[in-house]
Image 1 (cartoon, rainbow, N blue to C red):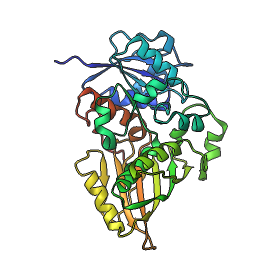
Image 2: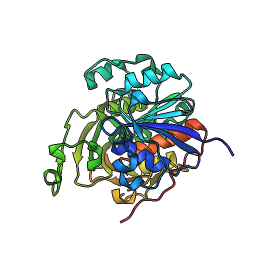
Image 3: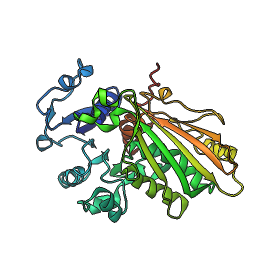
Image 4: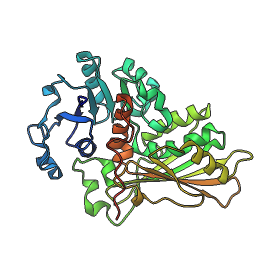
Length: 350
């Protein structure tokens, strides 16, 4: 029997870290060797997340206590801005290590863009230059040989997957993309915040980060790369009173000669054979509940009233395909495993 891939999860006490544990605990080729936390260090994982009772998991330790001996791959589910120096130190100790980073620290290739959006200079420029943008369906070959993979953001993944193929095909105007992207509460993390109390968010919807949300920087980067020229999409995120899911309504302006039907054909051709992306029949609208708990993405295309516009709708689970599931998919790819391994669970419904 082939030896398992030994992994460590940094930041295991958050929603993203716990989702990694959920997925990897049943992965047939993986052994979880180390879990780190800050405030929860010293506790058993089942004390922090009781759903893991009965699993043989390592106790939570601090990053300073992390032992890399025998570890092949590290998932970093740490806060933005903290991961750069952590990963730099990991590679200094063990250059052959593989790392999948779920923070925003290595997603942007331009150091100036990073400094503009995140308010400080990047602390590991040489690693920023080598990181592969980890959206498998659109960047598979670069990821396959990477040592460091930058998992994309959940909002950006939801919009990049449908929009980039259309830009590459020249079917839409890169200067006229309007995105309204609604997310569930888990996207805000697990830390206690007054504005995230049940009574503060239930029975209502509100926009946040309007005109300045940091995932916009990933859209600028990937849309511009696909279009071959700058693209500044209008992006408005909204918070919905649900636990999981992202639902993006994307209004696009058609290029000369393009139709909504051609957009649908392009997406269907791009994702034919992709195990996790489902392009629905033309005119059919996806629902977030139909991807909940899975690594699936569902896309729909609808003709708008105006002959030069179309509406593209995209939905995924922010904790799975939007974060930890995508990270496992990246791990599978760089490790030479089948991409679907450990990720073939169906959506949870109702």
